[in-house]
Length: 551
Image (spheres, rainbow, N blue to C red):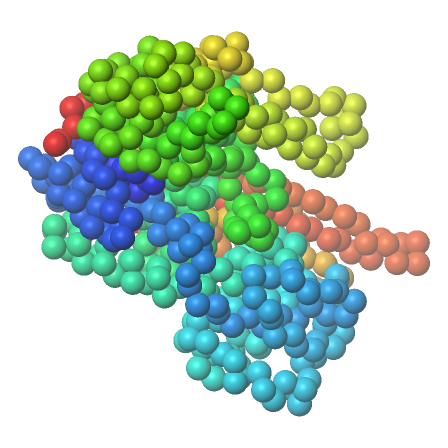
């Protein structure tokens, strides 16, 4: 059986799947002051009447990394960079970096080494977990590796290197990924230790994975090498849950509406769209691959504020449980109940709570729902404009201009039923809310495929190739060509994941570039760049049916 656990802003959900069939579900309030407490609670509920030894894999989608960074309460980590000449890195990173001498050019040539005499105070600033990054280290890692070695010798117990976290060009994104990984390392280690201890007590010995922002999973201990990948796992879980329950056949917009937030994603040809440039954290761009998504502070538990002009503001703060379920004040859910979009709880209490805004509670409820719908619609329009403005790279992109036209709305999450209906009416779009939608995130986590990516670059005039993620250069084998390059990266991925206990490790090529080098009018070599990954997606489709929660 497969176990999925999703920690949301309001609830922590768990689902146990027997193949494609959901056999057990549980939902408990998220304990923000102690995330682990909620995980343990929901785990105990979902295991009632089940045998722990029957669980073959467990995946956790946790907000621990996201919340740690969003709250901005973590102490800064030490960051050392080698930007080379001519680059201004002022205010480019979350912390002021220590700048070292040295330079690697765009071809991967070291044009200047590190002058250690200029940096005698370097080791006075080292923190137990630090980060380093060198421009063009993805083409020549020697200076970056040397810096990692020296910092490790002088008190940095863990050092994250930008090129090993991402083998793609973009110095700023690689550097920020390394820095944020270093900053959250301590919190992440403590979290993993508690999770492992809790699972051990409950005699769960199966492989434990963490969900990543790109919808793949990674084993718990392997995640220590790239903890920043555990950012934005909640939105990723909802995308995978939709893929498992009801993959859209038309261009679609999916909305995961919980108690606190709404996560919005786009779908085309049955696949979720990816953010081409990676995720941003606190407005700093990173190399973390993520879906093209947006999260806004509107959910079923959102607070309501009436302006003097009579208009409403919904969210972003959470008011708590709706009045219909015993809460002390009206929430968006109460407005949806009174407006007739959903039926649950005590309708009379919803009416009573809304009377503070006006005696005609039906009229006020419709205005509140309209305000929420307008805010979500505006965000969707912003995303559509953002997607349309993405850069084009080929003549075909220009000739065949691509415009994303949504045809259906898909809703999941506890607050999806009423709000997506209202949004569908406003946008004149078909609405689909699959069975099992209320725990779609936990389902998505349970069935997510493990994945990992890596790249290769070579300039054959040098006689070397580099797989940045492994941090070293190797001599080119004889007869090197595209097939050889693919084989080298594939073998690296399979070797790196050999301890993941995977039954299926299918790889796929996701990008390939080949350029000829010309010198004195003659071809002098080739530049080959490619990236591959363990194929992402879901392990299986899940039968959309409702199963009673274990209360």
